Length: 370
Image 1 (spheres, helix red, strand yellow):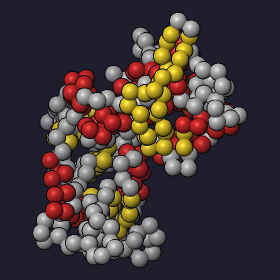
Image 2 (tube, helix red, strand yellow; image 1 turned 120 degrees about the vertical axis):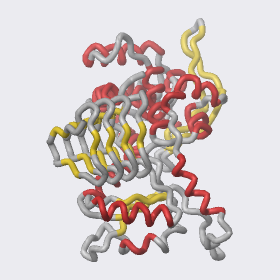
Image 3 (spheres, one colour; image 1 turned 90 degrees about the horizontal axis):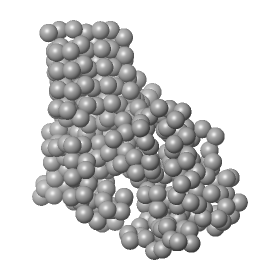
Image 4 (cartoon, one colour; image 1 turned 90 degrees about the vertical axis):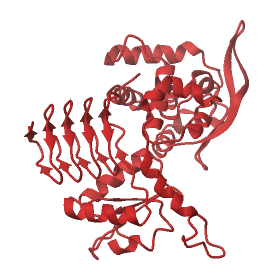
């Protein structure tokens, strides 16, 4: 399985000096398309106005070359925001809507075109013994699981009918998320029912409490995950233009937002609002930046943990609730970070160390406490 670091290396290659083959490989990595699907894809199948990719055909090898046939699972897939932005910048590669994505012309591509491209990327970057379109698709599936996508949505998105296929191949990446039980509050008889004409439910909306220096970082991670329809801030500073209201407004906004998270650097204040949000029935999510590297072996992350960009978490690490792991920090093997702590940017917590509750470790330091 490709690591996040390897995925970043590949994406850097694919987004530098774009050309049709690179866009095809980009869609395998960032939308999980199969090689047969991307080879059949034409520009007209990309609906930029709605942000949808329409999968209606697949390419198959025949004695006469490549032929197109109807897809087993025709489907319309919403583009992640970053994919839509990248495609918009590549539209000039295609002179007409009948052009194939992989060739930039009306001539259908051959399967080997993708493999030739990936072999060249692999040779330059030294990623693995081999690199294929299936490796890119598998990395996308792994990312979706780690971002919290439910199994049945994932099956639909990548065109797999049987959930057990994904469970067998990717089961190690699924983690229990008991905090999502808070979303059941919407079914309570005590919940305020919508008035006539008012939209039912809050959708996947995120409320961030605190719009200071930490808040925008949390928002950036949430946007990178691509699972929230709306993200908004609350802050008691009336001069902060990011905020839609004061902190106390979390009570009245419960009908509009399903999830919420405190984003204060002050551990006492963060704990205070962590408890208030829990009591109010919000789901408090873990937010893990896609570029973070987390061991597959015995890592436990609590509720409300924020894992920023480039964080590395080794095996047998425990991170308790309401912890911030700032960009580039490293948690070595068998360490424990207790609740409400904050590990600063580029810190290293050495093997077997324990970070006490509510402690803040300064940026760039090496922490040892065994």
